[in-house]
Length: 248
Picture 1 (cartoon, helix red, strand yellow):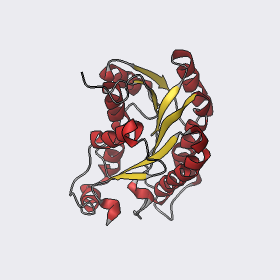
Picture 2: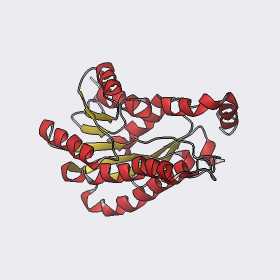
Picture 3: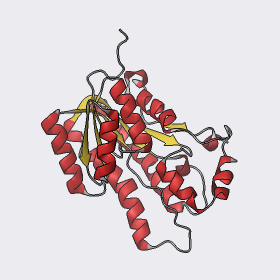
Picture 4: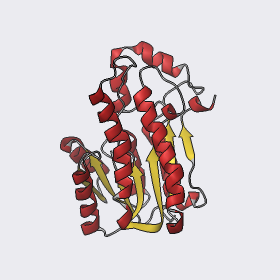
């Protein structure tokens, strides 16, 4: 029998109720991990837990709410007592064109995408095993200019910067910190952005050398690599899963 790549590992995935987070939870469980997933909407979370089927616990919560994060990690501590892998993935994609950006929009996007990532990681550390793996979800948008997405893209650039510093902060514990940067991926969040017109989608596709959007599972396979011992000598990197969009 082939050994599973995450056999016996305890993993936490924020934003694990849909899209890339859900696809990654499926892969982690298939590879032998026990997974805790979070999501803001209880009904979606329940559906995801049922879909995954085994070795998964759903904890409702918003990563920008520190009390919700405390509840998440209290649950992990009570149920399993440790964390080996954290996929800090929860985030929102929201258009905010320059000239009409509101303070509330700015606060909402930064609170979830930047504050949420920071405290998801910091509050996990007391439970984290040495030699563990932290993966942060950034985006090709952190390296590219996109009309109407300057606030979102800035949050993703901040996440890339976090990984550089945290790689050094956590080196004494041999905890690896890496970034996954998807390109346009067929997720509910991106579909919502396309509701205003197919021309946005066609313009975006024209910037991708492979000529199509990625699937959540294509990103999940790369996250699995960074979570597993296959990447044991890799830390501090940004791995683009973007069809080439950020590379040209």
